[in-house]
Length: 318
Image 1: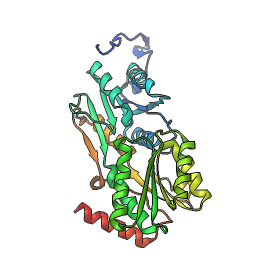
Image 2: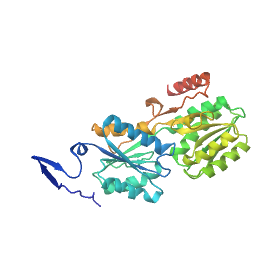
Image 3: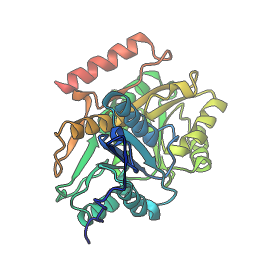
Image 4: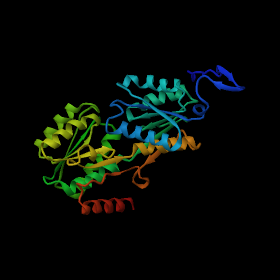
């Protein structure tokens, strides 16, 4: 399968001796066009997709590129949306989410002249026209686990993930490690909703964890977080957000967030592309050392807790 040929013939108008293309204006022709193909959950998921899109919008303002996105309602739409992005003359197509890994690889092999990036997925043999963008979620989970260990009153906390895939479960691994490292008597409840869109399932899991004495819930289930947060509010316990700063959603209830700066990764990838530094076939990883992950500081966090966590993370880095 070959990359679809695009017409090199432009219909032109001669006006006062100036040739003007009927398709795009002169300014538009020079703009780099970037399209994000989102995984399920929508662009306003208050998590992964939203962070990626905000990063693309920042790139548009700072770098003068043209950005757009295509939402996927189901896995079956991934390849179709990727090919639509190519048909729309995108210079760079970014797949947002682990679930899109196979689709990006398949289309990248079919369109070898097209440039792609994929967030949260990589391959044993990375196609030369694909850049995998990866994050150390375990470090972010560890950071908020340190916070939870300092703030839990019952000694029991919960991690509620969406789908048990590395980009989600790694948060839980770091969270559990920190909790148990700080106090071996602490208990960490772990469960997945098997969805990144099911708020009702998030609520059911959260209610059970509250019954089991959890007083802090780490929300990592995408749209399921809405149900989890409702339970936290109703039971006067604390919640931890994921991916992007989430305290603004409920300032009295979300004590911190495990930050995965997907937006920054997207923006820097676009920057590299515009500057000719986009190297396909190679992974780019973001972690604590380069600001790729971290934790959200909120008014609910005591200064001594913030200081303790920062010093512990610094010692771990060294």
